[in-house]
Image: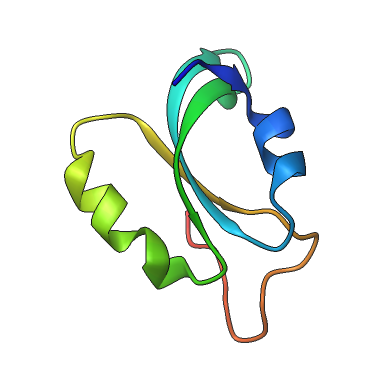
Length: 76
């Protein structure tokens, strides 16, 4: 799978949870720029198996809608 911009990947999947292997980061802003989509699902738990298979990679988990689903929150 080829690397592409994170924003391009996000635009392809509406209201989905994405698991992305990050390939390039803007170090000054610590912002992921490019990566490879490993998994997507309407449910966060749908990514669990893919996370377990890709331990050791720099991973990004993100939700593609403007708002998180009700009752969900991001923790940094």
